[in-house]
Amino acid sequence: ERMRKQMPGNRLRAHLEKCALTYGCPAGKNFFLGRFEAPLPTATHCNARCLGCLSLQKDSGISHSQDRIAFTPTTEEIAQVALTHIDRVQESVVSFGQGCEGDPLLTADVIAQAIRRVRSETDRGTINMNTNASLPQALQPVIDAGLDSIRISMNSVRENCYHAYFRPKGYVFSDVLKSIELAVSSGLFVAVNYLNCPGFTDTPPEIDALRRFLKSHPIHMIQW
Image: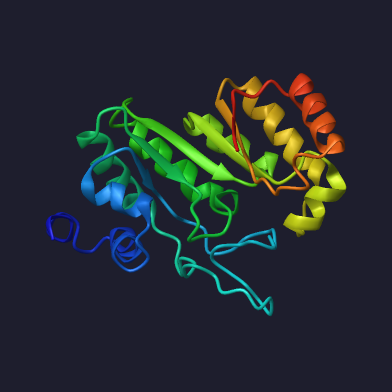
């Protein structure tokens, strides 16, 4: 109720309200409870067709767990939500790229503008992006705008296995590696969201590939 009164016309606030109250989304709840990491969903489309997509399933026999956002918030809508969270939360994090959207790099222009807007008012808080890292050319302007950290979703560090799950449209595995290299060299905190599958992730070929990947790509964290 307080947030409705504070930002009555903000569509992103209204979307997060549905996430928190209808879907029970922990990230959505964080925004309204004023704690931890708050979400900033922006992307209506995705350039991957992940077998386990949370927000879109077509003819798979699997129900998606929440509806994908149906609009792209404006720069001001994003900045208002982000600044509200940063202003009232110690060690706050705001994140683009949520389970209720496509990939945020497809809305990189809006995101870069929103980050600049936020950073024009405060240097507090961490601005993060969760992404498939498919478009290094789109990532660069977002980094230049002031992105602090990035978490990249991968199910495998082997190209054929990655393609089998993500089923990318208009990008390939090498583009993901380019984005990781760009993020590391730009000084971002870089994490990999490593989607695990017992009987696959723990096999010798995948483990050996992961070791080689970590030697050539000095990321900061793996989220298993």
